Image 1 (cartoon, helix red, strand yellow):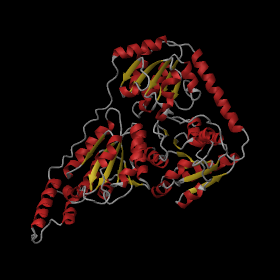
Image 2 (image 1 turned 135 degrees about the vertical axis):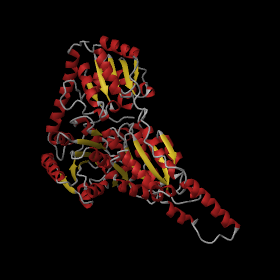
Image 3 (image 1 turned 45 degrees about the vertical axis):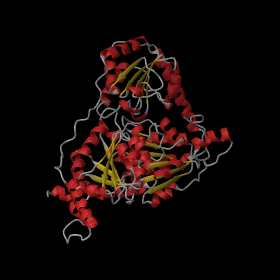
Image 4 (image 1 turned 60 degrees about the horizontal axis):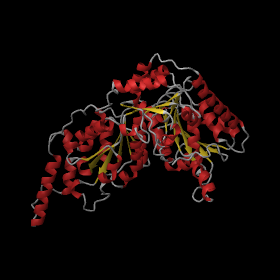
Length: 580
């Protein structure tokens, strides 16, 4: 027996993660997966344990989005896997390369009432690109490599590998569990048959040569669109007098960001950014527009969607029903969702946009359209400034977000988790650069904040991590302050506390005449953070905001996580903004 065989499947997986250059394994411990965690640590992979399985997957999701690599999480069997499903679905809709390792009941005990034994593959399969169960120790590493390849190929997404406990633990220990070692032969026929079956089963499970070859290269990004399709797009662009460019998450990755930025400059179009593309153009690029997107789209005669589907965020394409559409997308189905484009360019949207920019070079467009869009943008910025300067009894949410934007460092990553307050922050905060903004994405998931902030801190060591929570969303992952403290993650959390699920109440009360289930308490979230070992600051009025935030920055600079609890005035800043 080799050392690798004696150590068990968990040690093999740990060594394979190290070979894959996985920097961190996010987890919540469980007996079914203990060998994976020990194996990863012994192989030199950092293990960060959280307080909720969903947070482990959210952290892996954030790491994958910000680095362009894979994020890996391991959760225990049964309720551990089930608890991770929301985060897995969030990663699927955000097209994030997440590998989830799930513990499972021992192979011999499946379907016999073992602890936490459920049909996990049936539960997970609808929400992942690929799923498999390891049945032999020798299969673990090859299946892991297949999982990584699947997660990164084509349209990225999460994958799931189920790892039964007896495939993970050392062989000698597993044989002790089943009592199939030496000793006297059993007397009864049934006992002899059972021993024969178990020995045969374990011989198969521990047999075979370990196929620890490197993973296959990702099938990767589709080829650039055909020249004919690019030619049609160039002609549409040349005829357009009011074009608008929308760039979304799919177009941006660490490799493509620089070329994408250059392409935007060559095209010279009014440009809106969404999702992970926020920050691509910095804070003051002359082509960047941040406000009045709906008005610009309604007036446009051509809309270029670079990695942006026509889903609820664009009112299913109705925002620009009279405009021609050029759709650049990894997925043909997503490119044609709700609107049939005049031109569909299937491929990496960033690369396709660069190719389009190269072909369209030399096409001059007048400045009147850009000036019109810019005037709308600047007018809205003045409205926001006036709103922030208005008197308030407690803390004005707009003024709070503007202050965060003013004092945050240039290396900051903004993580948003919530409804009304987080959406206000998304509208006001200007990320400093590409891949420095995180929100849940199209699934609209609450509770991603703690895990996202953790993943962001790992992806951007030394950066200032701002986590802006609505008070409703904060309760989902506030326990991760314990994780931040234990692992030295100096997050600055800001909770906008208005004692309500405001985004829901604002529409529910006028429509249905009742605020049932929307009222919350103005809880002392700063005290909760202190209870977990972090720092807490209470801010009661707008005049206290800057001092409180700067104190938070100073505390975080010493390596301590801190939570600023801001008591908000009721706000109608986003009235009428609920999407369906």
